[in-house]
Length: 234
Image (tube, rainbow, N blue to C red; front, top):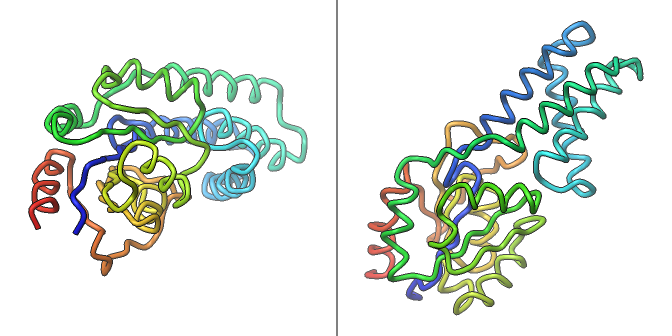
């Protein structure tokens, strides 16, 4: 079994809180359009718009705001008040300014692994927003490399782990998104470690590969160094 030399870390909701701000904005969105549709129906239409628009807008706040505006136009049959559009834009701007709050033991886990492994931050979303969050987190200098990508696919992981290490066979990815942070790196030939977060985006849901020998789940990042020790020693 290959010795792990490179560890990839997801950013949003793995190292710091993120999805909670999307949920707060969704609640505001529902309140603004309460006179036009029920909240559950609105959320279903918003999720459908997000799925449609990922190929055009990508991941992140800006695509989310555009999808809200598109959904507002649809549910109001093109009668959405300008005030609502203005408030949605303001909500998006607030999201792009939200302060960074690290998740428990994120800094400690990175500090413990940095002397022995090559650490790569692998995140997707808007370039400027991800750079802002990394800078505010205070974790930037602890990583050997940072990769901000449009999506996380097996080929993307294969390329990154070849660029920053000895390939996917000697790499491990840790994150809170089953589809992007666990299944995709396993398909590339690496390890996928799932760290659940309190809030999960529906688009990232997938069945865990329970039977795969390179899949692991830990309740928090504080257990990651011990898991690496077990993998490297097995």
